[in-house]
Length: 492
Image 1: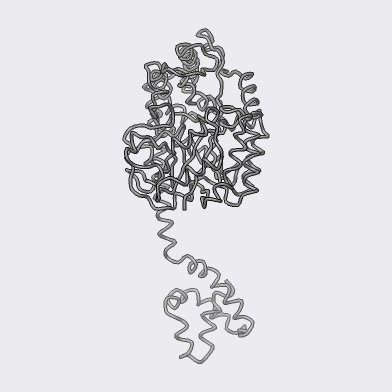
Image 2: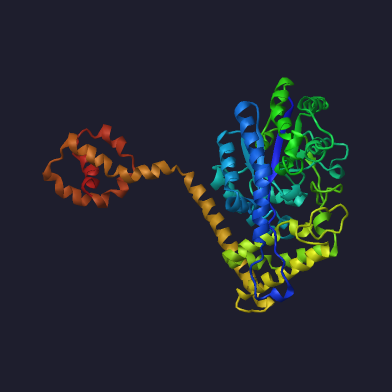
């Protein structure tokens, strides 16, 4: 049976304000609050609210419907601050049981390409946030803009995720189809779920120009070659209302998909359910892929000298930020990592939206001014020490952290070994000395004359304890010896 895996991303750009060179060292607030509030309120009203209401209705009216969502931490912070009704709708959708929340980097940034430890911190931070909000820890991961390579796959597998979403890019698939489940070439534990580019972009990119009907679209899916049973349709939730106006009836199209699919014997599946299926083989991805632009690579963020300079400068202080523990620094760090900061600097043709910037050079200058002030703030946390001293301190802290982690793992291994020695017996031994005495006291009613024997009992107790006292009981008919041994611990 063919299965549709439907997934949408929710992320909101955090807009930086105009920041001049002369503001460095004087102004440590980097955000355009007016534009942030205006944009998130507008997107919530035109897109998120009607789209989520439609998904809730679909979940309640169709038993076979399922959908997956992922939220960036920065986007979620904006929603909680300026559009809490969207968070309420996400909770309502969660209560239907028809949605699965995936994990992604908290900042929706490029840490997976710049600093492994920062990337792991972001993933763990977002995973904990999803667990806190929706009550379940995510088991499937999607990177910012579906960025993936074999090395990233190994990191995600080591973090315990069962699967990862990425792009069905032609440069890595070749003759293969995205309609199968593959696994990471360097770690078979991680299943790979690949986006069908054409079918996804029929909705996300071309709907306004080439309007679709739900039955026609489902026919295309049903007519895919036999055996190609996994159809992955991924996009951004702003597809509904922002990329394509609601006047195009795109929500009505979405709403009709489950019934049309059911008529053709097609079901919906969560990404975690697909990860339980057998992989058809490894997918080797030695270089970066993503779902952006025709190249499906990372050139839109790191394709020119300005972008790489800003990227390298930012992650040059990654270790200092990780160990500093300053909450405000951490918040600014998340915002500065967001991938849109680097996208605004691209010189590739076709970039239509640059936020407040007039050109990629304008975006680069503004970002580097802010980054200069941010780096100075981070360095000031270390008492004005020079770079060598700071790096030495960070190395020391990191080594100590690694030692503590190694010892914790060793302790955990020893604890598991001890559990093999039947801990229930060890627990039973403690009350066994008192419990039998209380039970034995009532039926046997030991005479008070034998109290002196109880004093000598503690000395003789260890030896007979190893011998099986039960074996002596049937041989020694007199009850005088048996009570003496059992009665000794009775009054202890």
